[in-house]
Length: 197
Image 1 (cartoon, rainbow, N blue to C red):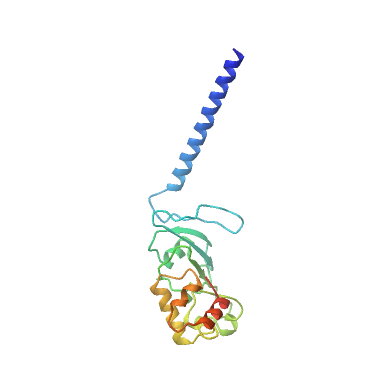
Image 2 (cartoon, rainbow, N blue to C red):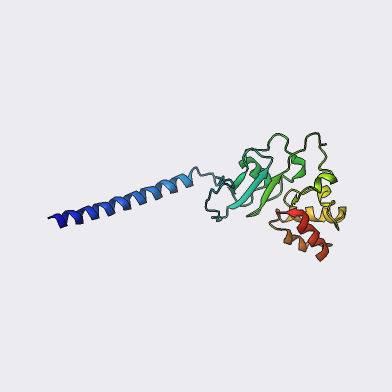
């Protein structure tokens, strides 16, 4: 009899564990599906949060950083625009320099949207050349004026880069700029040194 009760206990334990796993999976699936809004976002920080970033059913995943209320990684529907990503991140923060980004640009999977912060006392027209030298320029939000500060880029080529970016719904890497006419190997090196995706 003791052997039978151990067997029964093992069977009951296995059934209980299986039910717990099925229940946890159902709760997780229900929590992930949420409302029928396909723009449900992911939010994480560099502290080690992890989540599944693979695109499913045509969704894209973008990183929104800089002067926004809730910087993080968000899942958006395919065809979403920069303004949609800003909305998912809670909108611009006080002092955001929105005129430096194209809010109408279409997003691509893996793109980073960086909203620059207006420096205290800075004019609304943009970042000066002295400020632009301090750090890398965001490829997703670089203005013609900012691109013009890069060695080998003039106003005409800078305009071509912005038009190319807007036409292709953003750029995921600096290497994509190799397709812009007027950009040679030396210019690509300057771009790699001064731009960040």
